[in-house]
Structure formats: C-alpha cells, structure tokens
Amino acid sequence: MGGGLLQALVGVSEKAAGIARLCRREEPLFQLLVAEKTGPDKNRRFLQDFKTLADVLIQEVIKHDLGKEFPELQGHIHGEESNEFRNTHGDTVAVRVCATPGDTAALLLSVLEPEKVAAELLAAAVHQEVELGDPELAGVTLSIPPQDLAIWIDPIDSTNEYIGGREDVVPIDGIAPTGLCSALVLIGAYDRHTGCPVLGVINEPFFRRDPLTHRWQGRYHWGVAYGDTKLSSLSPPPPPRPVPCVVLSRAEGSAVRGALGPLCGDRLRFAAGAGYKMLCVLLGLADAYVLSEGSTFAWDSCAPHAILRALGGGVVALAGALGARRAGDSGDLPELVYNRPAEGVVGAERWANRGGLVAYLHPQHLEAVLAALATAPGL
Ligand code: 2IP
Ligand code: CA
Image (cartoon, rainbow, N blue to C red; front, side, top):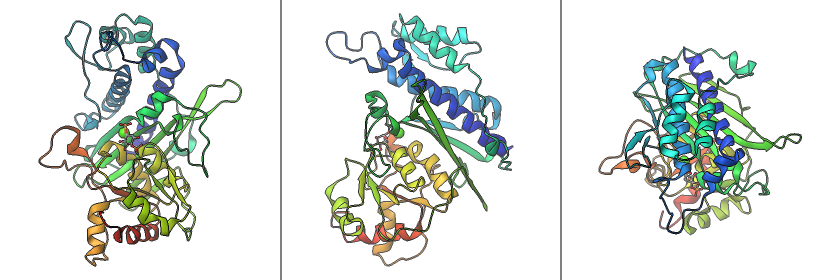
C-alpha cells in the first residue's frame, strides 16, 4: 500500500507541475497570472489574485486525487491555502475538483468570470490522467500504512519567482540566485503520531527548456525514510568537502553572514525559495541551508526534509540546536516535526518553523555550521 502511495505522490506532483506550466504557457491564463493590480480596477474582477487561485486549485487537485485513491488520508491532507474564494457576486465559493471537467469549469468560471477559456483550460488539466513512465519508481514496494500518515502540500513554493518568471538567470556553481527554476511543487508525508517526515517529492516544473519545442520540461526527486527503509531517486552524497558551501536567503541578516564567513570563505551562496535551497543541499550543490528566522512553514520543509533523511541528513531547528550546543550538550539534535502547531499564535504562524533551521546532508557539516554560528552575537 505505502509503495502505491509514493507513486501516487509523484503522480500528483506531475499533474501539479503540468498546471503550473500551463498557467505560464497559455495566453489567457498567463495574462491573469501576471496582471498588475493597480488603479481603480484593483481587485474588481478578482477579490483574490489569480495566482492564489492557481495555488488553491493545484492544492485541491492533490487533495482530491490522493484522497480518492487513499480514503484513509482524507482529512489529513494539509496545505498553505484555504480553498474559499469570493466570486464576482460576492458569494463564497469553495474551489474544488468536481465530478466532471464541465462541472469544474463551471465552478472555476464563477470565480473567474468572464474568463471562460481560462476556466476551461484549467478544468481540462485538473481532470487529466498522468502516466508515469518510471520503471525505477514503479519497482519500489513499501509497507507504510496510509492511516498512519498525513500530508503537507506547498502547491507552488517561491511564488514570487513563479510570477516573475525570469528564465535568463545564470547559475553560480549550479545554484540559481533567482528565477523560474526555483518555483517548486513540494509534497511531503509525515507520521501522524511522531510528526516525523517519511515520504517526500520535490517537483521542478521548470527544470529546462526542450531545445526543439522550447517548452518547459520538469523533473522530480523522491525519498523515503521510514524506520530502517531509506530510499531515494537521488544518489547518496559524496564524502563531505572540507570547506562547506552554505546557501542562504537574500533576506538573511548580517549576524549569520558574518558568522559563516570564516567557515565558508567565498563559498556562501544566495538563492530564492525555501524548497529550492533545500534542493540545492539534496543535489550536493550546497552542504547546508541556514535560516535564522521563522519565515518557513511545515509545507515548505516537510518534503525536502523527508528526502534529506533518506540520504542520511536532516533539518534541525536552529534556535534549539544552538541552545543545546552552547549549553555543552553534544547529544543528538531534535529534528523538525510536522504534527505540532505552535501555541499562542493563530493562522499560518501555527505552522511556522520557529527559531529558524539548518538543513544538511552530512552531520559533520551541521556541527561545523552550528559551531560557527554559536560564536555570533545576536543569534
Ligand atoms: C516562500 C518562498 C520564499 C522564501 C520563503 C518561503 O514560500 O519560498 O522565497 O523566502 O521562505 O516560505 P526566501 O526566498 O527569502 O528564502 P511561498 O512562495 O510559497 O510563499
Ligand atoms: Ca512556500
């Protein structure tokens, strides 16, 4: 059963990536996606952004398809977005996948009016069957009971880069500082009881352009970390480099930058998207991703975290880890968990990865990064 779930997660990520590409490829959708909301017309046609609708729709497709195949997961599939929209008449509409493409198109039109073509294009993509020609993935059989799992979805991580759509960004040692390639679909499954991430899929809808058709082509990566079972589509990491390369948000403050300077020298890198930075670690382009703020959420880190664990790495809470090392505690550091909302806060904040994080593949690099950060004042 669990093996079937991994294939299903990859399948829905492919469908989601297809919708993300469609919204940039088809003119009626693209125009809505990049529409500037300025002037007196602001928000008149849409009370929310179209980009939010695209996000919500992708999230609902994933929920619908997984819930249908695995009824045990219904009610346990969570994401960043609420599916409630206001239509042009001011009524509340719950965006969802209906029984037929016609019904879905009609529901979407009630939010998108008068954009009929856009509603129909989206509905057709929502109801499309996805075939995975992936013998390696098809051969994976697992026995993870779906009733023990729950799901976190980020339908499109790095939304700003998705909207901005820059295609000409030159990577630095393989890491793109910004641009469309940092927009990712993230789907992670965690153990409902322990909160531990166990299955992860990262889909890159905009991995490269086909040289002949000029259409975007995607790719995906998956990982399993369940008890002693550790599997991944990615190769195990090579031995650790002596001087680690660390990737940061461009918004990262001077305390972290300054503290990591002596450790990394000229090997500090900057990139957009929490998911993309963790992907850089997974691909061996960076050795760690350090974030000092609570500006990522369970849906950003669950999928990459599962794959990092599959390869022997992980994600720890920065504040807790620093506290432990500063107090002389050299024991195992607690990894982030995904089933425990923060108390005393409301909304998305409940699921923030508070106190920041460090994502790593080699425990030696985690320790080196923590040792460097422990000296920083203000962290
Ligand atoms: C965001 C997005 C941002 C990222 C932030 C994420 O998710 O990935 O790019 O900030 O952490 O939560 P930064 O680029 O500074 O790392 P979303 O786009 O889904 O809101
Ligand atoms: Ca995100």
